[in-house]
Amino acid sequence: MPIRANQELRVFLVLSGALWSLLGGLSGSFAQEAPTGNPPSFYRDVLPILEQHCQSCHHAGGIAPMPFETYGETRPFANAIRRATQQKSMPPWFADPNVGKFSNDPSLRPTEIETLAAWAEAKSPAGETKDVPRARPGVESWSNRKADLLLRMPRTVPLPARGDIEYTYEIVPTNFKEDRWVQMAEVLPSLRSNVHHAVVYVRPPDSNWLRHAPVGVPFTASTLTDPEDRRGAHWTDSDVLLVYTPGSSPDAWPEKMAKFIPAGSDLVFQMHYTANGRAASDQSSIALIFSSHTPEQRVLTLQLTNDHFVIPPGVPDYRVEARGTLPHDATLLSFLPHMHLRGKLFEYNLIRKRMGTEGKPDYEIEPLLRVNYHFHWQMSYRISEPRFLRAGAELQAVAWYDNSKANPHNPDWQAEVRWGEQIYDEMMVGFFDVAVPAGVDKQHFFARTKERQQVQ
Ligand code: HEC
Image 1 (cartoon, rainbow, N blue to C red):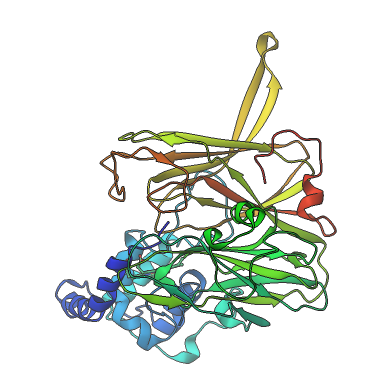
Image 2 (cartoon, rainbow, N blue to C red; image 1 turned 135 degrees about the vertical axis):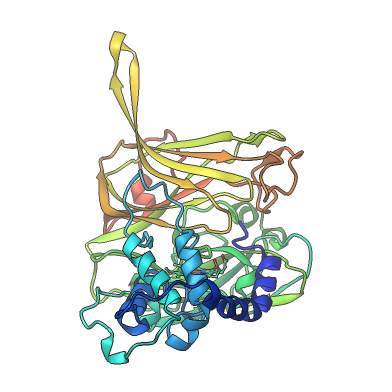
């Protein structure tokens, strides 16, 4: 899931200055008359929209190539902003609006789109700083807060210019003397262009996972000598602290809910790098904000996975599904679908079994999220009103793949495609976060009679 085509992005960055000033220069010839009297101004009308809907990515050091924090930074992009918001390519969001409501949906209201357009048409006036509305809706953006702790991978990872790169791990000791609850976390790659995705796991001191692997240096599964470690590299029941995909991080958990890091734990960074034509190196970090007090509930990241599919060559809509039942009560918080280049659509459903006519079981499917998947953007979708589910609730994830010639991202439509790490292979992972009582960990949550184990 390369989030952006690196090649394209580089071209975009080089061109952007020239291109935007060109567009800026042209705009006058077809701009409409500014609404007389009262055109929108940057400080009064535009900045509040940017703060709420754009700055989570468009801040200095954010995932977008240019910040929109000051007038000077934003003005050159006024026309581009008008166009992107009218076409709804920005802010990026791929959930079907008819299914579910999500608290991190950044979509603009029609009046906001009009305001941005009118501002560009009026030649983007600044207005006055005193006009910034005082009572602005709470802006809880990461860029406004300082991390309590920044943990960096101790060693840089050298990346080749070309070829496949095996998943790379680095174990980072936290040296926490006490248990810690994490309210907000963000993975900060030092080389965003090459980080395809990353998963940061919590390894408690009593876990045997990767116990013989070296600490504080990068390694891959194939360099491990212990067979148990080698097998374990890819499949672990350790809790996930955070999944980084461009567009998805930072993650903040709702009030009274947090992620748990037991005293003495290590963080295990699992990095998926892609080569992009130039040798480079990365040294990613994770920024953490701790909860001020013990939360009522603990957040666990679970996943619905199917790794047994074979997508035939040329097929435009191949369906793969995974199902699982929750062993205990849990509150559903958010989703993060993960596929690669052939990903097309991803759904999460709740399945209810009823006795139908003639004594045959009947299934009722309630859709929870439907994503028109775009491999550049792997986003998380946070449910507006977290959903309490009883033990035994059955969840289904359905993924659709386009392995036809018509898919512009398809690297080889004649290939038969299976599960694999590399982006020309496929994945089918429906991550989702649930909240459980604070004292329950993943092992306890799954302690139940052995049955289907697809929810991991
Ligand atoms: C989730 C992250 C994210 C959010 C939120 C976001 N952007 Fe972007 N934006 C990007 C990235 C990354 C790029 C670089 C181009 C790309 O990868 O598509 C970009 C590019 C752009 C561009 C230049 C390319 C184009 O499409 O014209 C404009 C203009 C833009 N964004 C405007 C906005 C505005 C306005 C908002 C808020 C209303 C917004 N963006 C919200 C991430 C984001």
